Image (cartoon, rainbow, N blue to C red; front, side):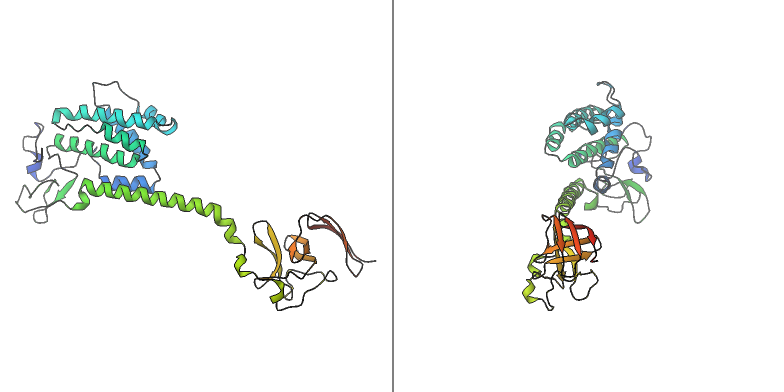
Length: 311
């Protein structure tokens, strides 16, 4: 059925009147796909609810509560497989009186099995659009409204010409089902890329906060003199740099990307005092240290927990 057909609901077919209105249950497939993608599936759940309502027009099957069906789809694993199959069967029954015989039950079931629920939704909504189009007096290929550039008449967009003034008309590719499916596929790829990107970022973010080991050289190349335990080093000391995390769980005395591997002693940062051994915090050391000035430091797992000044 490629040409416009009309029901008995109109004395003057809406297709010819120039004031055809898109039925409420007919949805723009491209907009639907974009909403599903950019709401991260929330619109898909709304669509399941509304489509269940629509499918209840099939009087040959028991009434299904849209709320219950939505909850089952949301919380029962793989229930959406049954929902797609059963809903498509109901839509087939609804379409029979207007000669729309599409049975997409197997197609939507397979799409759901492979996790392509968004594309399954496009297929079912296209089935609804065809039923609504023919029921409203338009052709089966109608996907929405068209407006004549010459007389501004509104008519179904599967027409070859304006029914009021005869001006030629061609449906844009962006209004076709093929474009909607293409957008759906791209949307799924975009969403998958976003999820993968977030996953990778979550596992690499900590590594990115530290120093790149390739940029850290030994203390032999440092442009300053190494110290010993006779001196207490402050984080703001321009001579010795600061104690920073150079890798996850690894802290060192660093200045300008260089670890002072010649230093063993006590150094300070905003988190406290630390026992540094050969440039790195020794988290395995616990005990008491004394410097050459008579000061003593009690260390637990690399951190100074108390200190006593020389008398």
